[in-house]
Structures are given as structure tokens and as C-alpha cells.
Amino acid sequence: MESTLKGIRGSDAPCVLDMDDAATVAGGVEDTYGEDRATEEQLVTPWTVSVASGYNLLRDPRYNKGLAFTERERETHYLRGLLPPAIVSQELQERKIMNNIRQYQLPLQRYMALMDLQEGNERLFYKLLIDNVEELLPIVYTPTVGEACQKYGSIFSRPQGLYISLKEKGKILEVLKNWPERSIQVIVVTDGERILGLGDLGCQGMGIPVGKLSLYTALGGVRPSACLPITLDVGTNNEELLNDEFYIGLRQRRATGQEYTDFLQEFMSAVKQNYGEKVLIQFEDFANHNAFDLLARYGTTHLVFNDDIQGTASVVLAGLIAAQTLLGGSLADHTYLFLGAGEAGTGIAELIALEISRQTKAPIEECRKKIWLVDSKGLIVSTRKESLQHFKKPWAHEHKPVNNLLDAVNAIKPTVLIGTSGKGQTFTKDVIEAISSFNERPIILALSNPTSQSECTAEQAYTWSKGQAVFATGSPFDPVEYNGKIHVPGQANNAYIFPGFGLGVVMSGAIRVHDDMLLAASEALAQQVTEENFEKGLIYPPFSNIRKISAHIAANVAAKAYELGLASRRPRPKDLVKFAESCMYSPIYRNYR
Figure (cartoon, rainbow, N blue to C red):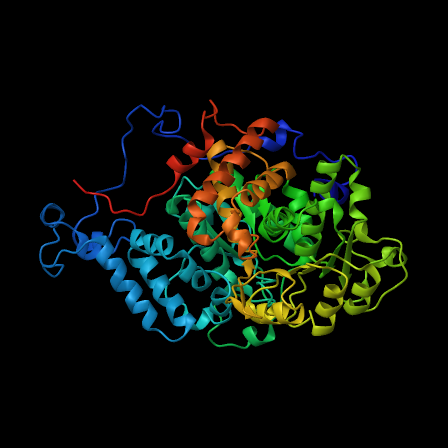
């Protein structure tokens, strides 16, 4: 992937491993109280502005415990009379909230209830999410978060995160300083132009950074106070939103060209100046024409990560690596065909080629020839090269033009079919029957989100392939019975990768993201798939073990950062898995003095 980005930067541009002093020094959070300089054994003072008590304590989500405050805490913190006399455990609170959430008929109602809980009692929210991750993940993340973004203006009650609009141009650093937390470790930022497969949702894309950072904490253990969701409001081209009386963003067309570039430059400079070199900036749901350029432009000067390009690529590669254990052989034995040649498709393709190159020692240019892409105009071939966007050009191979997916399947005869098109029902019965006709067990990945945009359903994949397919999707699907056998579809969900990846970056003090760190994350995830999972046809482990999985991913990523010389935390911990687990945020209530 670095080779693609270097091509965008230009042949003389630096790579991720080239450390330029001018690029790596730019302000940062001042360690006023010496906490960062203290050893793990030294005592530090937990400075705050004041001690929260009474009515204010009950309305501080970080410290509020509701009816779980003890008698002593109620006396000490002036809570007498502000709560009913009952004292309950956090476990009982959790059971009550889950019971209430299950009463709602609509997923969006459940989403709103969870967001209200997060705003009122942070630890209870995360305990709920951690303990019920498989049930609640589709609510706080895809597919429900997509509907939440579409209706964000209507359901908006209180702000979560920072909204930085074109009105703040020239004052972005001041806006960042308005955020109450100073020690930020992870920022998820979107401009809302390509939210999931739903298109331009403008300012209402905030649901994505909020949801992603909830998972950084619940699944990866990054503390909530270190996470900052940001929406860059540069306008929207969505006419429906511009005419919606409840729309919460700027009512103007999207900024483009130099205006957009200058705005992003000011934002990136302000983030580094305010939070320092080691804050991870995750680009989320930017349109194709901006996503690669931003990653190329800032990959050598900032700690940046694009989940749509790199996170998706890493989780898909992990599934393919795991599938080789199930099927036998290696990645190099396969021929890959993609439907969709945007940031997700080309990102996945490049990481697959990179891993094949690493395994076989063959040049990456040769490895790319095993991978074919179909876009809206048909198969990407060499005769189209001059008209292609830069990120598609490496995939323009020698072949006669092919206009549609079915013809491409019959011509290329792939063993792996991957959908990143953002268009539902594009893996038709003819397509799946065709790939199944010349493969004993085809690998079919329908990755587009949300569920409505999936290239096919699990039932269609298993039925049309006569139970042959090794199948995974981007959104969750129920198990399918075919010919008396239960097939459990895997979910190639980015939530497997980015929380653990982020933890590994944070705990190692990494200052750049390198391709080898993505490969390390993929390998760690693939190693977590058990024989029991394989027997069910799964190529991903269950989410119920996600914190353990994230710890292993974080350890692998951190180890690679140390190996590459990109880690700044010294000395290196002896046991990185144990250190990752020790760094993880716990949602259990604390006892107050």
C-alpha cells in the first residue's frame, strides 16, 4: 500500500520510515504535572479542577454510578435525598438496562437508548457493550449507525464530539482547545461525504466517529477520555438534507479544490500542535477522491490511518489467511476478482498483493497480476489505463474489455470473489452459480455496508453455491440451514482490527503507520480462529472474545512498530500481550473517597 501512496506523492517524496525533523516536531500537550515522565511505580497526583459532588456528580457521565453509590459515598458526596434509598449493584443495573433495551421493537430506538446511557453513565454503557458485544455491536455500529446518521438531525439531542465547520477557518486550533480533555490519543474524523454505502450525509456523519470511538474503548480498551470524535463540516451536496428543516450542518454545497485542501491542512496542523506527535488520526468515510490523497499527503508527517482503506484491507486479509487453513494452500494459489474499485477494494487488493509478495519473495508488480477489479465500466484492463484514477492504474492488466461482472467471472475464473461496490444484490444467482461451477469451495466476501447494500445475503450465497461457499459479509447475517447443515456466515467487520490496532499504536508510542503493521494485525487476527470455528465454516473468531483478540493484535502491531523503529515508548515491555491487557480500560465502578 505504501508503494501506491508513494506513487501519489511522487518518486522523490519521503516514505513512512523517512523521519524528517521538520515534519516530526510541532507542538503537543505540555506534561505540566510530570505524569508522562513518571515511572509506572511512581505516585502521581490526580489533579482535577474540583471534586465533583452532589447534583453535579449525578450529571457527570464519567463518575455517575446512579443507584450504585454506597451509603458512605452518598454521605461524603452530598447525595442524600438526590437518590432513592435503594442501593443496587452494577450487575443489576446492567440486567435492567438490557431488559429495557430488548423491549424496543426498532433498532434505532435501541441506538437512542444506548446513546442516552453513554451520556448519563459512561462506565455502565461500556460494561453493557463489553458484556453483550455480539448483541449490541449491530446497534452502535453497522447497520443501525447508518440509519442513525440518516436521521441524525431528527434524533439529535446533545453534541457528542467536535463540529468544525468552514465558519471556523483560521480558528481551528482555538476550537480544538474548547474540548475539555487535553490528553487525546485517538481522533476519528469524517467529512461525511461517503457514509457507509449511504452517500453524502454531511454533518450528520458524526454518528460514525462516535460509534467507532465507542468500539475503540469497548473492544480495544482505549480510555474514553482519550478519544475525540470530530466532524469536519465543509457543506453537503445532498439536496434532501439541504432542504431538511432538521438538518444540523452548513446549508451550502461542499467545498472543493484549494478551499478544501487549505481547510484540511489547517486542521491537521492544529491537531499536531495541540495534541502532539503521537495522536492517532483515523480518517473515516471520506470520498475516494480525497481518501487516498489525504493518506498520501499526511502519512509521512502524521500518525494517520484510514479505516476504509487500511482497516478493511487488514480484516479481509485476515479472513483470507485463515481460509487457507480451512482449504489448504496459500494466498498465491488463488485468483482474486473484486466488484468495486474504490478505496476499500483497491486497499484490500494492495494488501493482498503485499502479503503474497512477502510470502513468495516475488515483486509486488507480479503479485498484482493475480488480482482483477471490476468497476462501473467493467473489468479494469490496460486499454483503459489513461482514463483511470491513479489508485486504479496498478490493476489495469492485459485483457480484452469485459463489460459486466458475470462475463468477468467466466473470463477470469476467480477462486475468490470480493464485493466492495456499495450496491446491494450485485452477486446474482448467475454469478454465484458460475464461480461455484469451477471451484469446489469458492471464497465469497460480500462486504458492502449496511445490510441493505450487501452484494448478496447469506441465504443466497449458500443456496446458490449449494452449500459450497466459504462466505463472509460486512454486516451481520443469521446462520443458514442448507441440506440439513447449519452454515454460519463470518463477518469481515473492521471492528476486529481498528480497536486493537489503535491500542497497539498508542501503547507503543508509535509515530507513524507502516504497511507491515497492518500485516501484523491481519496475522494476529487469523491466528485467533480456532478449529471449532473452522468446523462451522467460519474464517473469523466470535466477537465474544474480542478483548482477548484485540490484546493479541495490539501486541503484534506494537512489536512491529518497535522492529521498524517507529515506537517511542521506552523501554519496550517484556510481554506485550500482558502489557496490552494491563493498558485496557475497565468499566467496573470505582470506589470514591
